[in-house]
Image (cartoon, rainbow, N blue to C red):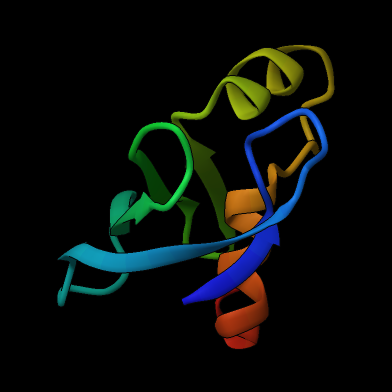
Length: 92
């Protein structure tokens, strides 16, 4: 669980819950490594960590911020992924 800026216009702090929904126990092939469900905002979102190559990973989130800003700025990371990375610093 993390406290993140909320979904309202004032961005009031809100409690967000992260739940692991998938974990790939096999380690080194390209594809989905882990996925999480994030609840606490207006709707539930999904986060996935994708292995591109053995040394390169990419984060995906289904929130609008990630989808639309990620198209313009490839290195953009939404608040949901940032919150998860604060809990899992070794996953970055």
